[in-house]
Length: 367
Ligand SMILES: [Zn+2]
Image (cartoon, rainbow, N blue to C red; front, top):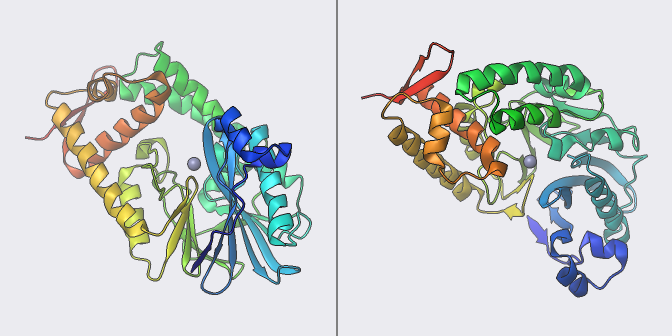
């Protein structure tokens, strides 16, 4: 494994504007993206990380995976494509053009062999309809992701219905700001327009003879990690700085902490992986240590939930007890996470789940 650090440190914004990078950094620091980076796998596959501004102040990575001669690649695949946000799409175009001009990669939208979706979240797949218009490359995604990509409208409508049941279950007042945020989120999760999936993936598949497909449900039920030789594209399953947001399993098939932890075990069992590249942030050569840290972090979070649930409490009660200084912007992620933790403890015997007369779930630590 060789990490090629001979990359330009110029930001995409600076590349576009031609403004000298140092000056640009001072003026608009939030527009600065990490440089495009190249990894070479043991067998010589070139894997480029293209950072994107998926949303304002929130970056994600797309990847171009290329085999064969620089001047005439025999295979090229785009893994994830950022959001539908115009900055994200422009960063993708600029980053990919940079691979041609700076690295001599003669890839093109016309000859691209494959589009791959690691998981159907808006920061990774929102750009798919726009990219679909640029290339005839067939789309591959986990088989459970197919409805979200091919019928986003009906998926969105199902979410809206589900949200009301979820509010009741979690004990959230239906007129509260949380309720409004949850209803809005159901809309944001939708792909802007449908895209057909030509190749539904399953665990163990070898896609195009290049990618070993590892189904890693948890953060999303339909998430896959992709192994290329000694490199792992770890999607949002394994990230360098964050524990990925989790929803309870009742919200989505394959979601939840139990699935997430089991998927960590599966990734940890991989032999010969030298580096992991996640859907956000930089490369992880210490990815095994990262797995141990994540397990420890969830252990602490579970203990905090158990300590808070001495009396029967709803998810909403737990949220307010655990995060008294909760900021609105974090509210939905932490609500989901609290639900995922409580549900996991309910399943594994750490909490007893009963039901209140109005349908809200009550959780209490088992004595
Ligand atoms: Zn993500």
